[in-house]
Structure formats: C-alpha cells, structure tokens
Image (cartoon, rainbow, N blue to C red; front, top):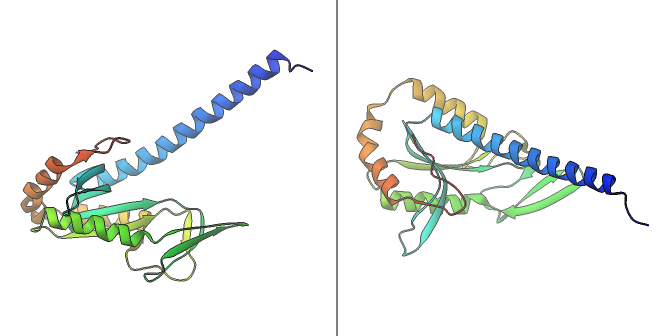
Length: 191
C-alpha cells in the first residue's frame, strides 16, 4: 500500500511549517532578551570567547557594562520547579512527570567572572545565573541566582540614574571588546 502523494506532501509541508515556527519563536525569544539587555546597559556583548587567564579560552554568554561595572549573565530557561543550592553539585528540574538534572551553573559562572576580572582588574565584575520566569526555585534561591525579569527591571532603574563610573570604565570595556572573539555559533551584539 503506497501513501497518497498528496497526503505525503501535506505532512511534509506541516513538518516544514512546524520547524519554521519553532525557529522564529526561538529567535524572537533570544532577540527579545538581547534587546532588553542592550536597553538597560551602556554596552552588551553576547556569546564570545576571552582568554581564561590559564592559557585557554572561556565562553561568555552575556557581558554588560552598567552602573555596577561589568556584569556577567548566564541565562537559563527551564520550565518547572528547580531544586538547587550553593553546595549541590547537580540541580534538578521537575515539571509534571518529567525530571532531569544539570550541573550547578554557579561554578562555571565563577570561572567566567574570574576570567573577566583577570582581564579587567580595575573594574568591578559580578556575575549572575538568571532564570526565566518559566522556572521556580521551590526551596530557596542559591546565592548567584536571580530572576531574569527582576534583573532587567533593576538594571533599568539603575540605568535611569547615570553613573559617572561607567565613563571611567569605558576604556576597560573597550579592552574587553578588543579581546572578545566571536564564538563560532553566535554573533557579537554590541551597542
């Protein structure tokens, strides 16, 4: 029994449409976050490599120049209840009847923050793992974890009050931009 060619074409067209919609939604979500980060900072670099201070390179997801100095932000988008703490090696996400674990993201964040501090010793450098609103910490929030929405809101309020320090830090920001090597799978976003 051979499938009807028209049915096969309809199935393929539906599959193609689903793939296109998935790509558009992913890009829209990513672009929206990048635009929000650019809006609340004086500078934004995304998905780049810098020297790690030990002869290698390290990937930075987002770096912002803001009133706090240089802010390193790793964004996580997990849906469900998240269970993790500063001392736990693995964290768990539970959504309905699905469960998975991932490595504590704070350790990698500390490495990225240290690499930027090594490169720019005269600028305050802090880092956060920012979770989207799709995930909730059920039993307390670890020390380097923030809500992405709250972080953007706080930075937006701080951006309204211009900071002279940002002008002082601009040469260091330029050094970071110069050292940044665009990761092969992404592009450099900068204001």
